[in-house]
Length: 175
Image 1 (spheres, rainbow, N blue to C red):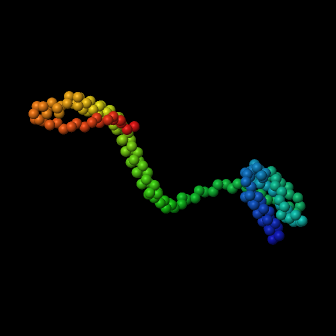
Image 2 (tube, rainbow, N blue to C red):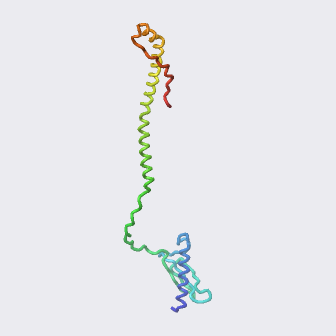
């Protein structure tokens, strides 16, 4: 083979390889692949359109004068798997500030759940406080009607009862 023929063959192969690499679809959709998994072609080794390539589907290709027959596999057979690479470096710790905030939020949520369990107890205490306020007010009215100070004063002032405060007013529980 002459240098000129070798360079023509090289140009043809590089062109075909370029087409294979630039193809975005599968090889079988663009190139005729024979049953043996090869692509068969003839390339023009001499003449005006040197380097031109014609592909054929079958293995039995008869190339015209000044053309050479070539073939190559559409896909290479799988090679031997390589050994495992070295262990990578461990990653950096997570964002510490975010983790601290998440912990704090978890603590607050737990505290809210604990407080929610107290709601029935607080409601019962509110009811009792309202009842007690009403009883104190009623007692104060009863003592005021009896004029206890006047009675004790007529007995010789043995005992002096201080002036009782006025009514405590209506009690309402916070909602």
